[in-house]
Image 1 (tube, rainbow, N blue to C red):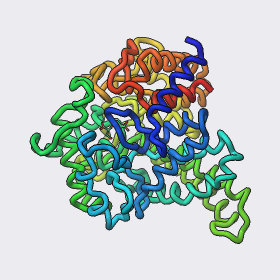
Image 2 (image 1 turned 180 degrees about the vertical axis):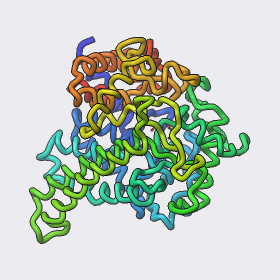
Image 3 (image 1 turned 90 degrees about the vertical axis):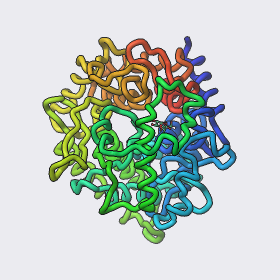
Image 4 (image 1 turned 30 degrees about the horizontal axis):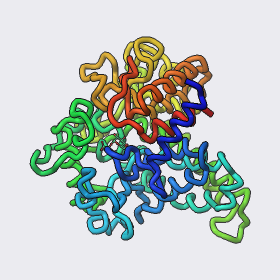
Length: 451
Ligand code: 9WN
């Protein structure tokens, strides 16, 4: 297949999923706007239409809450209520979220997703700096991105070490990863009759999380809602420091510093935030990326596994405990340029070793340990390879000079994307597709890899 045909097919997926203001991950399974999907989609969309890519991010950020959180779903009120569960009447953002500053004009969920947005905004700006300046794109998104990071670094610093904690598996985005099995086991599932799973109208049950998982997701989300989405003391039963979530926060802090540098070049000192303030903020952010990287290594690096692990803050002990499961989340910090000496090389060895099998039994990086007891090549985040995590690992391989491996992974990703019809996820060994087809970030990131 030529690059031109691949590009046309990926572009056709993004056109079909475009609603006029943003892009749905999948028309059938996910008919609304999702937070980290939109960030990855914008990264690909910038190659087709920098204007649409800007709108994608602006639409998401327009639904930001007053406390700074960017919701994980922005609902499209033209879509029937029963098309996706949990629907707006479950989250009740405009009433239960009022105290936390949920917007009145649009309905959203009340939880978050990984902060890929500043990184995406910077890449979108770079795709067409002239258009970006003409539309004051960076000036418009900057205050919202700054408030978003502030929320994560303050309200979500549950462990006290500076890292952000996730309060629900949906927040981290790898919903049924075996990394969550132990922390979730403390959550009493909601009654099976208390909710209806719309996902099973479109997805095969063996590809999706189980009913027991859903019972726990529902319980946790309902309890957070009933606490009126308040953070701080009295956090719920689930609180985890996750490597990918925090690595993306650090990468986005670096991107936000670049955004501030770019704005400072244009700004005078009269209009706030003036040149001096932007430069000072960029300097602080760069320092913070260093201290956050140190915290990430101190809290989550496990030399025995040669991998970053998740820290379960609700486990016994003053700092909780590390979860001894190998998830792809632990490889994602490879995107960080300033890892301590030896750490990146160890991560590359782990990615290519028996547990993730890259360049050996696995064509693409699996979401979970090929040799782990819970490995299942079809079930969602318990084994299949996903395109966003593979794209991140590929970026890390390239940054650390592993060009041959990066090229091999890029070719395998492009091949898997097109032959699977831009599947949501694929078997990491055979690249056979599962889940939704015509999936937004699969098409967007394939496009990005063609550039
Ligand atoms: C819950 C939209 C989202 C992705 C997540 C993925 C899946 C939702 C679901 O779909 O989660 O947020 O209904 O299963 O796990 O990463 O953002 O594509």
